[in-house]
Image 1 (tube, rainbow, N blue to C red):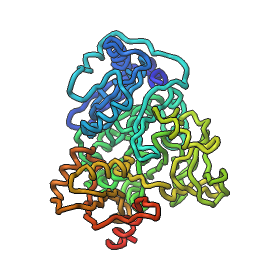
Image 2: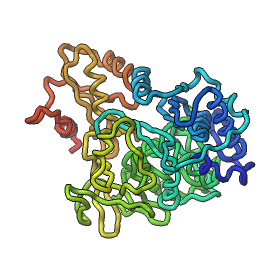
Image 3: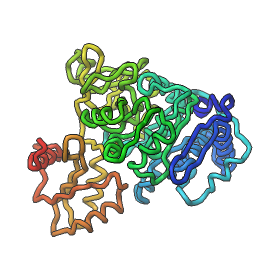
Length: 476
C-alpha cells in the first residue's frame, strides 16, 4: 500500500507533495516525504516493532500523522489511527480491544521527527489481502469496532479518481479536515499522492472562515470538506476562486440548498459521495457524470452495488438496503475479534451497509435514511449506546436515550433524553459527560423526562423521542 501511494516519488522528487498552509506552514517535496516515511519505518523497527504488530496512533493535525501512518505500513506494521478528542477511558478501551505493541500519543513519548532522517527501510511487500491498517467505526452493534482493511484497499481507491474526484497530476487538492479523519487521510492525502498531485491541508486551528482566502492564495483546484465547512465558508467574506474547478463532499448528507448556494457564489459544483469506514466511498457524482438532483449519484465504475431486500436484490425503484458485492477490493477484511458481527453484515455475496436507498432505471441511487439508530455528528458516525452509557454512569440518572434531532432543514444535533432521580444542573451534567466522551460525541441538547418510551418487548424507542421533539419544535 505505501509503495503504491509513493509510486511517483522518485520521478517527482522535487515536486511539492504536501503543503500545510496557514499560520504554521510546512512544505514537503515528494523526495522529502518518501525519505521521512521510509526513515520512520526504520525507526519503528528499531523500537522493537515487527511486521504484523499493531501501532495505536493518537496524533494531531500535523505532518507526523500521515508520515507515521505510511511509515508503519512501509514496515508491515498495522497502524490504528484514532481521534485526538478521545478521552483516556475511551483510549484505554480501544487499547484493550486491539492490544497494540506500541501507542504513540501527540506531544508525548517518541520524537517522531527524529526518525525522518534515519536510513530508508525497504517497503515490505507481500499478499495484497493481508491486513494493512485498522480504523474504528461504530459497527452494527452500537459499540465501536476496529475495521481491518487489506493492502488491496488502496487499489480500490482508483475507482474514485474518475468516479468522484476528476483528479490528475496537475491538481492542487485541499482538504479542510484533520489529518486523522479517514476522509482526510484518503481523499486529502493518499489519493493526491497516488496520482502525483499536490495535497494541501490547513494548519491546526485554522478557522473555516479563513479557508476562502487560502483557496484563492494557494490556487486550489479541488476542495474537499464536510457539509458543515461549506456552510461556514458561505457565511464568511468570499474572494474570487479562479483556479477552483469543483468541490467534494462526504461524511454526512449534503443539503441541496447548501450545494445550490455554493454554486451560486463560486460558479462551481460540489460533488457528493456516499460510503462508510468498511468500504470508503463507492457511490458518487463526478465532474463528468453529475448526480441527478436529490440523488447520491451512481455506483463508481468498477463497483457492483445493489439494493437488497429479504430475498436478495429488489427491483429498480424499490427501497432496499444499500449493499456492495463482497468481491470489491475496497471492502474490509472484517471487524477485529468480531467474526459473528462480520458475518451478520453479509447476505450471500452482498455486504449490507445498514442504509436504505432506491436505484432508478438510469442507475442513480437516492439515499433514504439509516436502517438503524446511528447518529451523525459533523461527519462522524456516533453510537447512541456510547452516549447513553456515559449518561447512565451519572449517579442521578436511571435511564437515558440519545438520538439525532433535526433543528432545521440541513442541521441535526445529538440530543440526550434522561430520567433523573433528582434535579441535575445542566452544566455539571455536560462536564460529567465530556469527561467520558470525545467532544464530537457529546450531546448538544439535554432533556429531562419522567419516562422513556419503550415498545412491547421493552426496547427503547429512540425514534419516538426524536419525532416528539421535532414535532414540538416545528421540524415535522
